[in-house]
Image (cartoon, rainbow, N blue to C red; front, side):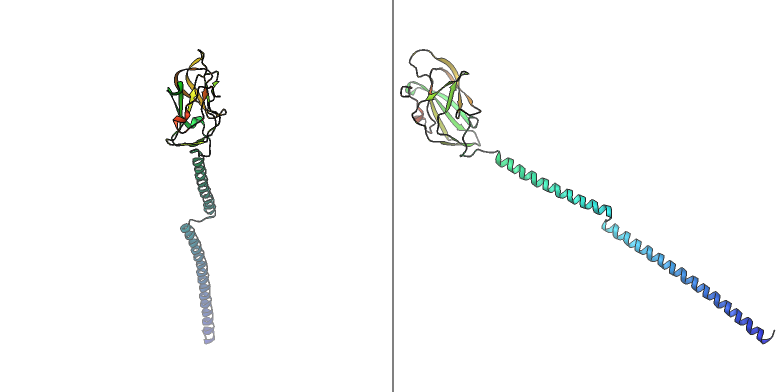
Length: 234
């Protein structure tokens, strides 16, 4: 083989080797680039998943969190409203004030027989525990029996209003029989009301008494002021 042919063969071999090296380099670069892109994508996805996991956030869980917050606020408002409503029921349903008139169901009544002035019934009234109220300055509504034998006024004018609370006691005197003739109706209790429109009158035991044209005094704070006459001065 001459020198020219040898040189040509060497150039061809070098060119082939260079082509092989270039192809290998391109392939290696392509693989490296592709692997880098995949790795980069995997890293980003992993970072996103890690962030979501650590924060507990997702579109659904975020909405759920908002809904739970609304429910919690509503519950708090409900408690506040119930508390306010309860406080209103508690303050509105308690004691009666002095400016409010007593009803018979606000009072404890008792009756006893007295011998003064020919005999009469002393009726006393005291506010029940926890109650404060005012007896109006007017004639007590007193009657006997189912037929409603009502007592007339033993006094010419009404007295002042009386504030009742605690041990404060009001007294009224009842003469059950103002007629001189024999006869009358026997009763063992009377019906006491605070005014004719009192919806809850009280039944008060008196013992056996004869009733005929009864009369009653106004309310007084002193028992001595609640002694009725015989009815002749009416």
